[in-house]
Length: 136
Image (cartoon, rainbow, N blue to C red; front, side, top):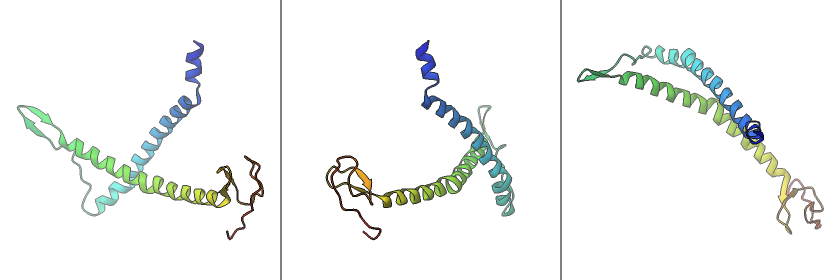
């Protein structure tokens, strides 16, 4: 029983549960944004398309391909909104942080670990190194 408790309260499992909950709420937010702003915007240019009622029959069986088209359009709009409003800006922000971080460190010429550019001695191998100035 102790192992099961450890598994349940393990950091990764808790983080995953939180991510799933936040992801589902975020999906609702994106869906509301798509239905509230994007779909009406598309409707301005030619009416709001609805494919949900489209189907074809084979031997009395209905194939509701219109529902699939609606779901596909919803998915593509949601993915595009998510990419352009969340992923792309976040990637740009992370790039800036990485560049700023790279600008403050350098590799020790003796042990090849990361050290501060201003360091005069490596914290890992204790070798003396020449500090780099802002222009180097």
